[in-house]
Amino acid sequence: MTELIIMLKAQITLGQQLLSFGDLQKQYLLAGDAKNSADVTMKTEQIINKFSLLERKKQKLLQDHSENTINVNQNSMMSEDTVSQLEQRLRMIVLELKEKNAKNSSLLHKTIEFINFNINIISQTVADTTYAPKGTSGAAVCKKKMFDQII
Image (cartoon, rainbow, N blue to C red; front, side, top):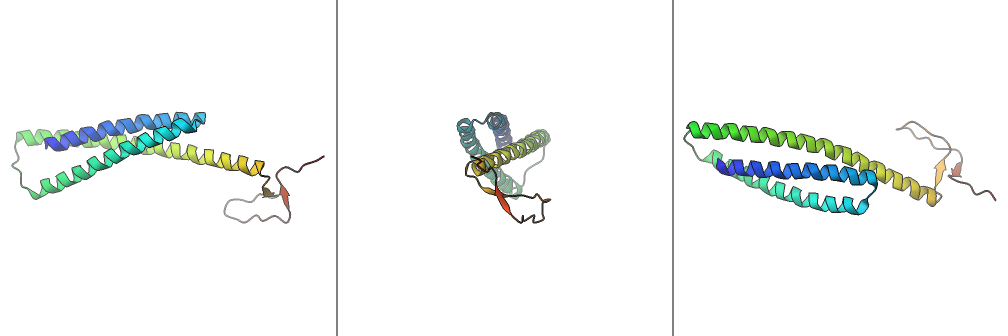
């Protein structure tokens, strides 16, 4: 039981680090700082790998634990309460992390759209003259360049 508690505490610590990196990532995305954003992404990936490794060890421990019979006493009941509290805390961290990742994903998507828009403007990509609601084809009869050059 103590091994499980140690693993859960380590996962909570890693989860909190992921949360702080999520905040940093948001700041860098809003500031347009691609280099620091990439650095944070690499550090986040390393932490996720450690978290995954701990999860696999935890699952193996739980599987081994379920195969062995354990005598229930007062001490193990207290440990089970501690484990359930730690699991609840870990769930809360994961939910918060999920929300932050969704927001950062949205920011990344908008940044990519902005970059593509600027590339299209620079390269003078042709665009439809009409707009149509999403899901319908609004093919224009004639196509115009985004910016026509007038001399």
